[in-house]
Length: 307
View: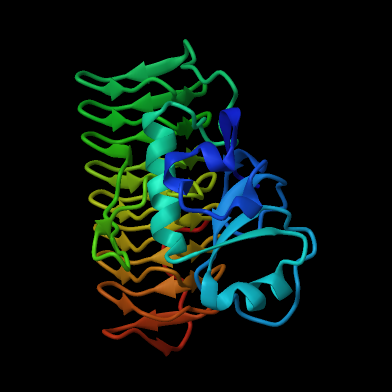
């Protein structure tokens, strides 16, 4: 479970972005922020559409910004939560995150060690940039020209190829009801598992409210781009030039052929094979093989090296 604590608790009504909320919410304290559905009392999140399914979540005790028109429906799904009905929950949440960041009230992701640091047993090439707030474990190699941004954790034995950027900010935009375009702050980080390897000139974008993860022993080829919040499991083989859209999940030992494009918010199942140059717009079940544009299933193959 990932969350972002405040350095000190704040009364909800004292936040400038919350100036218009009802007095009924006076006295409520905010202890941090998180994504929806985390059972954290006093942690602020938002919900601007009815969640899928009908089952209630009695454990979610967060403070949730909700639209006026959906308040009763969302209350039925999260009976223990404190709901704050507003005109545009997503815009208000983004504005609040930006205020908390500028006021230096917001802490780092809960997934990072409390005091991150760089091991003495790390090989660093020329012109490498490592920002403060990075955890780098023993046996890591970072090759020349690479940049490792804050809130990144490189676990033992990781290799980062030349001129790669790990933990940069990706693009996103939301047009609010007030006509203002907003970008979600990227609060989360990047976690690269033991023994994983990134090739040259890769970009791995840090997460927004959930960290981007690359599993142990996975291999990411040169010139790959991995979007925010992507979760890549262990021993995945990703060939040259692959693009993976945000919040997609890739299962254990999946193989992605060179130059394929994976859209956001889908799942590539464990052991699946995506053919060279495929454009994948729908989830792929475990063990299946897909090819083409748009990608379609063909007979299963075993691609990539044994692993």
